[in-house]
Image 1 (spheres, chains in turn brown, yellow):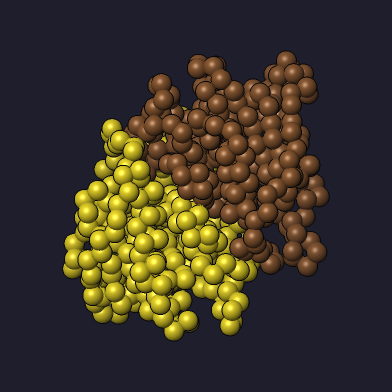
Image 2: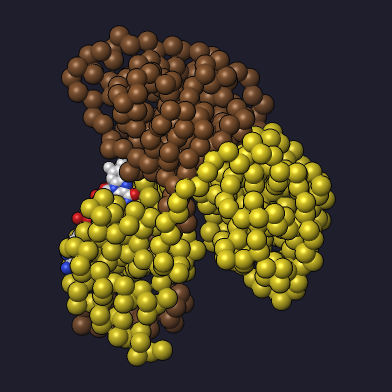
Length: 245
Length: 322
Ligand SMILES: Cc1cc2nc3c(=O)[nH]c(=O)nc-3n(C[C@H](O)[C@H](O)[C@H](O)COP(=O)(O)OP(=O)(O)OC[C@H]3O[C@@H](n4cnc5c(N)ncnc54)[C@H](O)[C@@H]3O)c2cc1C
């Protein structure tokens, strides 16, 4: 089985987000970058499926060279090889077109990625890639097993879960508890250094949307503390002051 | 030309999130001198669909083929594109949700349209320039996006506009799209739905519990408060990881992002990853015995105290004031 795992290179979940250059660029100073947490679940499940069924796991990142430590980490976790499309991932459509282009040249049985990236939170890349390739996409997938050429999966729906069987190939957006995050071991880290990482240039895609500038939410006002002896007062405040009841 | 709004149906009626999407679509239509058309798929009640008029739509296209009753982003996107062609729609609106994003994405690929998800307010339209503001970094920032593509697909976040009702009715027309078998290759083998009446993404009030609840057996006072308030219930990640509560209640950066009018956090410390899922809330109440809990910094109202003492008293106060 051939699996492609698409990973994003994103600021750590605890990162302080600020902008520079007249609010047109993320201030990357002091920010630690990580593999997107959802992508990390997808990668972990891909490695487990490879252990069960044989095959290969290829990691794909659309991003600049600064993301290579995260790609190496994915290789250390158990991917066999990696492709980096050398471009700034500015727009979902652009990223999806790059992934679809790579996928068209290789016959992957499964294309896995996180349900969304934690920088743009769009949750649209799996659907775009699926449509560009003309194959089904499902998200958010929280359970995935393969039997022959059929995927058995569970996805989260509003207030519950739905179990599905679908023929491969598929594009899936993943989330917990599809697998547990894997931490690379020493041997993985050593072998990752020599695993192939191919850098390719992007295919041209028309600019459909441009991020013009960024802004931050207004700071939260002071929290009004209510003494525990008077908790009942909260109800009145929620009614008359906050007007949310 | 019309602005096309894809709506989600629950029990034959238009979901609340989708009502906001219709209001949004109607506002955009007003800005570009167009009308708003709603697309509803699968089994639905005609009179419930006509209610779309109350939120500003002129017309509802209803494709009632039973094959479309079950959520299917592939087939839905296909039908949406057929409707967009019929209506000559250049702007398509969906409510942001797992289904909305998936339908928007697949339709965007078919139409070579840009798809922008997480929009928080009405667009700025000036001649040919069309700009929207969206939430990014899980609510920690916003981006203003200049959309260049001719067709624009917008996934609207909860509370981007207030759904206002006028009492008008829309005309409901039957829509009979071609259905492609290739979109129906997946078999649904089972569905588990919680019997909670209220889904987290639609709820106006959420009462949420963290590790401070100490164990699944202690949830009753929280459920009682939720019931008194007509609220949905949520939890922090460790709580669902420990199986104290079902996974679909997990709120935060790696769970569901919610934007209720009122979020009440009980025994949740307020880790940045949890806050990322709730920062769209209008009003946040935090109940925690530790006055230093970081959640207080993100709260509007705070109570330093023991949840097991505070919750029953709040429930009683609400019931007394009803
Ligand atoms: C990549 C990543 C992603 C994550 N994603 C998420 C996410 O999506 N959602 C999420 O929630 N977390 C997430 N986390 C975990 C997060 O960092 C915190 O660990 C988690 O939110 C803490 O949960 P908690 O507040 O319930 O528990 P704790 O931090 O243990 O807090 C319990 C709180 O209860 C209070 N308390 C205890 N007893 C009482 C009592 N009797 N009365 C009143 N108060 C009491 C304590 O003072 C404490 O503040 C993520 C972490 C990582 C690394």
